[in-house]
Image (cartoon, rainbow, N blue to C red; front, top):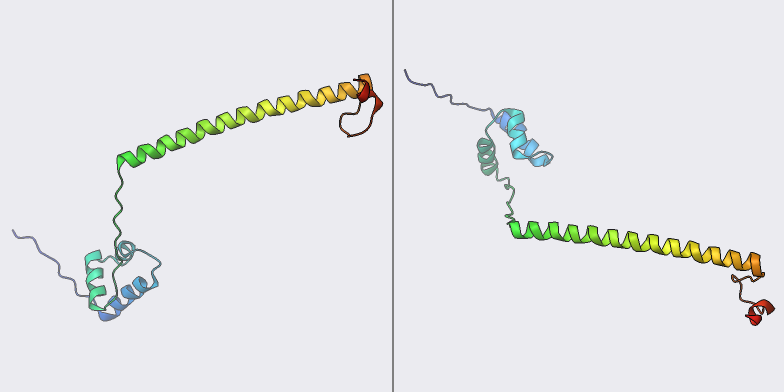
Length: 125
């Protein structure tokens, strides 16, 4: 028992419709071939026959070393963020303490440290 091989013949109107989708460049060749239920190889052959340029391929080499260095860089940046957040919170606390000291000086001693002035109380100190 031999297996039958199906040989498809497509009308020129059908080919033109598929190639028009290709020219729109809204979908990949693979998506178009699935949409029209045609082999992507057949679509590429039709593109060659119609002098439609095929998409060029760009080869990008990815190395595990590059990936690890990226992860290391992310880890370093996260540590730096934590250090900066800690330094900022320290400065906020320091600023609150200094503001409290300025307020105490004003209430208790009558000295306004926020202004530059010729306050006699400052000269006494």
